[in-house]
Amino acid sequence: MKIDNKSFWEKSDIIATQEVLQKASDFELYLMEEAKVRASHPIQKIKIFGCGTGREIEPVAEFFKPESIVATDISENMILKCRENLQKWGIDSITETMVMDAVQFNQPAQSFHLVTLFNSMMTYVPEHSARLQIFKNANQLLVSGGQLIGTVHNQVGTPKKTLYFQLRSLLRPFIGVKVGNRMTGFNGFQVPGYYYNASDLHKDLSKAGFSQIKIMSLEAFYQTKGIAYNRKTGYNNLIFIATK
Image (cartoon, rainbow, N blue to C red; front, top):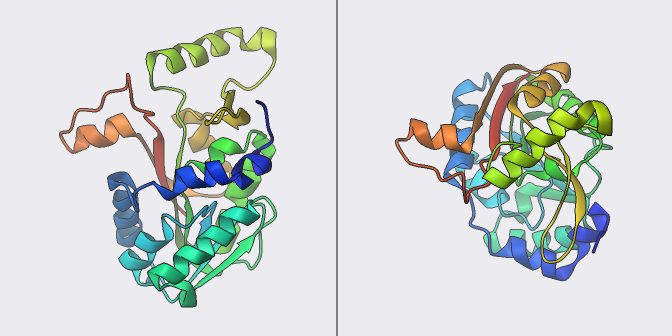
């Protein structure tokens, strides 16, 4: 069943899939460590886009021990569940949550030391202008020297997915659409999405005003750790860090 993104994330069975996710992955912890090393200021104020049920808020709070966190999501029901979790984890006093589209969140300027775009939330933003605006919003929100970290779905992964995007790239002059656009989703629902390649992600981050951009696929990340990664079964997401 085809459905729009907001309706998809409001559904109780979709929200339930987010509740079973582990608190933080090893590559997310790596990004947090990199942000801490790069930061020109102590990371005390953090903005989290696409917080969902709050899965990443707890490890972010534990790792950085910030003064405050502002977390937003497009889904009202996700935010309700997130608030329950924040109380359970005992970090509701430092975390402000609100329902808001990331495209609209561009104030206050220069107020945060770190912005996160975890959970591959950008995958569910199919329009290029909206994705670029979110990156620009993130840049505006950061202090000079602030860090942006996140993940996106990759055009290179399982053989079927890789071939799909290779064919779309060859046919682009005829189909006239961005190569990365693809229907995505799960639990029987299909929603419009976008899968990045590393080159286009770098271009968008640079256009949004970021520098010192570092992008790695999960396959490359695990190679640095001496761990084999099976692209036949793994999503092979792109992880990134960039500095304002």
